[in-house]
Length: 314
Length: 314
Image (cartoon, rainbow over all chains, first blue to last red; front, side, top):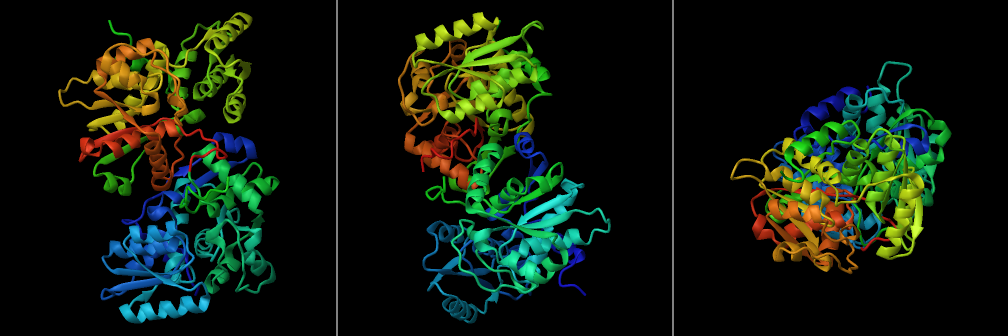
């Protein structure tokens, strides 16, 4: 019995469909020409709260027992805002534990969606202690950012939409941080019966290559210190995530910081879409491993678009 | 007999429909909440060549006599790239006269779409002399950027799509530079028979308010020197354009540079769309004249998305 299956992803979709946006797929003739393949960008930056994280957070919140009054998590990024909004949709309380050095824009987003922000010192111990305090204070249910079967199944719903929108993809490239999205999508595609079925790749910054190292060695790397610009991908792989990724992912491909920034500029100027650095790793993989994807129909997951205009890398 | 009519815009649509993108309309709950109205963004930044200019250029090029071998224009912006692409679609030559201090990105875009770039000194006299030289050299047909009935009818096709996509708009706000788009759209809506019909407004930077001054005084301002960040709106109103705008536009509303930059940031962070400053004047009008549009269903034309990531105003 697997952790998450195509049918649990289908079940997640039934639950969250009224709440999520079915995000569009975009393409650009000029990018196709530039890279010699057919690229299909799945626009999760247009998802509610500006990232795919809303799918998993919504699924987790909607499947909590009816008496649940509060949720909590730790996040310095998109999961915090997503959980705040998902809780607001169910009219329950959300508290997000945030390191005191967190980006003020991200904090503002959590509050914008109705979440309470609680600051903690910038260490794993401080974070866990504070989360425990909040969980006790509110009787809150902890909704982890990625190492959670409800969250993974929610993120997997991206694949269900994509299969319908572009039925004959040959490859998919998804960013991998904690691995919620990559685990969900690859599980969904991994159960396709055809031997010609679509291959799913993870895309990761070289500066945060724990997923590649875990995947290659078979042993999960559980800590890393990194300053990659792709701030959504600084976390290490979750345990459940790693198991699913090992079973279903074709390979994990890494890119440099410069390749990420260049690709982000390409997405902005050619697609006219505001993708955050963590989303741009997908196109960076196409740029770097061009021959591998030549002539192919490739889906790229634009995972989020939450940027701070005052802090751009151009 | 009017210069351009709803029926000539319909005829233009029949000609260019196979060549243009039918651009989507986007909306954002958070922007609607922020401004207390329903905003519908018509995404002409997703038009081919990244701006609405492709509509008018295509219409002009497609209606040239069969024997035409070349077109030419002067432009330091989106019209140059649009004409280059429109000419490439018909497999004829395009030469664009560009001031020698033009943005290198804009020059690269013209060449990317297959246009020849010819530089001239930065004065109206030098530009006209060089254009004449090119026209003689190639036997080229001059396609003006806005003061041209073919171009105005082409830009007016935006309105035909919008009427179908959001049938019950109460107001439309379109940027005004030379006035091709505002003339085309307002003409199209101006022929609606209902007395409740949708009002069309022009949006203009205070630093380039020739259209407002022309509209208020009834006498066309024909020169201005301006450094507004909305570089697509630095030109003055065309003669045909002014006549149509006088007949069909409800008002012209001006905004400050700071309001333009703030609104551009809002479009980027909320809609996740890369709008150029000239497109952001529309939302800036909503921000500034909020009470005037309160509770209304308003269409905003995002006219283009051609930005240089290295030169952002944030």
